[in-house]
Image (cartoon, rainbow, N blue to C red; front, side, top):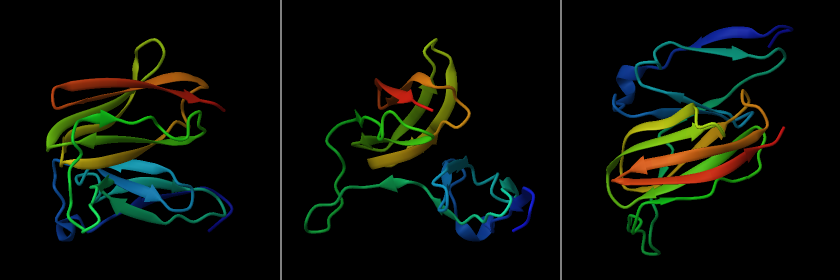
Length: 164
């Protein structure tokens, strides 16, 4: 901790983590709730800035959750589904969840009201189950945005509102 922002490099032992190089992973800041998207290639030297008089604790995860029955057996959802983000309206972050009945190539993107893509949250293959991504819009202006899920031959769009 110090009186000025501190640029730091997070160097994770990538070789020892046995990560899938084709997947996207998430560094969740346990202090602020911000979630950063990283690839295994970036994890060896990931630049961060720690604000003045602050500390950060990050958790590395694939942010994938599979539903389970009462007897503890994992079950996949019955169909592809894009759920409404929560909270909505939001500032600065919201959770976007979707369900996959089978392993699929997935793309989850955010667009402004003019149809310009402002963020790609997921672009890769995911296992069956319920998945959730925390989207932080700290660089976006107040307004209406859309998020689009594409996967398994399905495309779905939902609306969300950034309110600052």
